[in-house]
Each structure stands twice: as C-alpha cells, then as structure tokens.
Length: 95
Image 1: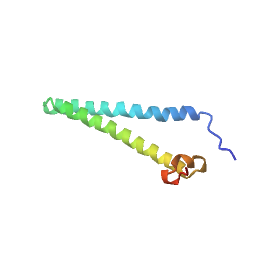
Image 2 (image 1 turned 30 degrees about the horizontal axis):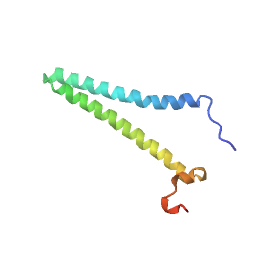
Image 3 (image 1 turned 60 degrees about the vertical axis):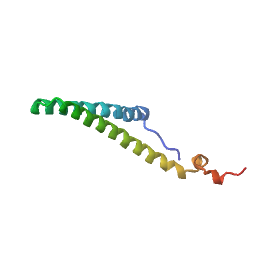
Image 4 (image 1 turned 90 degrees about the vertical axis):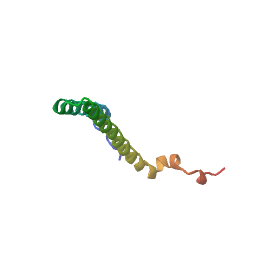
C-alpha cells in the first residue's frame, strides 16, 4: 500500500521550516525587549546587551533543538532497506 501524502503537504513542510526562522527572530526580539525593560527599570545601559545576548542564546537553542529533531528523524531511515547502502561501514565493503 502506498502512503498517500496530504494535499497541502509541501505547504506544511515549508511552514515548518519557516517557523524556525520566525522563532529565531522572535527569540531575539524578546531578548531585546527584556534588555530594554531592564535598562529602563534599573538605569544601567549594559543590561540592554544582556537581553540581546539572552535572545541570541535562545535563538541558537532553537536551532540546536531543530537540528536534534532532524537527526532523530533521519535515524529512522538507517534500518530501512532502501537506504541501507548509505549507512554501510567501511569494514563491510567488499573490494
């Protein structure tokens, strides 16, 4: 039985990839907003940069989580017979 893909499968896949970019931008903007709030609350100018770095760190964490999810999805293919040759070790090769 062949697996039927949803009618809007490509759009859904594209939205999932786009969501990573959006989440990166949102993480940085939230960090900047936090930095501005801290700077205005305490009157210390470098707290703005603390917020910016927190936002950048959150964006990097989002990329890392997406990477780990993608690796996990690709690991499911290593036992599939169609892709077995791609995961062959050098010791298994016959010359």
